[in-house]
Image (cartoon, rainbow, N blue to C red; front, side, top):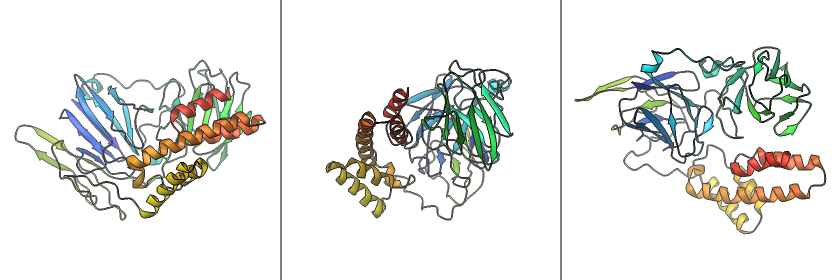
Length: 390
């Protein structure tokens, strides 16, 4: 039998046997698996049985659905042991028939995985975003580390673009590390800037050849976006409220417990874990989920951004969008998504024109880095940055 193990950002785990053929996952109360963290959309994803396995489909969620560190586009087949991430939740899918028959696979050389440690206890670490083993974690729990293709490296990455001894990391204390290029063939880049020696801090992107790693600070959550923020502070989590697919009642946000309901023809394991939040909003209507509440100020900001776009002032429109908080409900509306796409595409195109007109390499790199770190810019345009850096 297949089962899910759902872990929140404090390491609390909930087991859920997959006794039905389809499950809805999201923050709304009508979902059969309710994940109440604000980073999870009301209707985030579906999980459906497909032959002998399972398929997960992202429902155009705002923060995305990830499998083994890679963002899901449309739907993706899941295999035994795959790790799914929705918001701050890590969800492992396991075929119990296989887990009892085989032993756990050996982690990649150099990867002293932290995946089974409670999230809030994990040390500073590098997480592979692009490379041979996306999602692999490399704990930075010492003073000095060598990084390279060699199996003798402290952090061994088996990729042709990585030199045998590519770089060295030296702890400076307070969660900061010095990165030194050890005369590698393809260079070292921090946040897109090529350096022989540089400072690595929480949230920074470290690129070694074609491999991209993200530095995640101790106790932070890794959310694998192409270039987006990868951490969230401990405590910014919600509750996991699994329920049978036919259930419409959900659980309240202030009850912690385990519910077992026995149906007439089939025993259904229903586990509910919730965590109290003093600031939690009232539950949404179940029969007809309410649209996100739009704060007056956020709505006014969006109106102003649209007005500036129509006036041709794209830079101001872009800045106004950045004034809206990442967790604001208005960001889940279709109007916001459509307007953001128009503004950010035009803003990026304008930035690329400035890159062409820039007089020095330093100016060009500054502009390219600005595009690369703006996660609201469509991925295809941010990928263009990497091409122009070459």
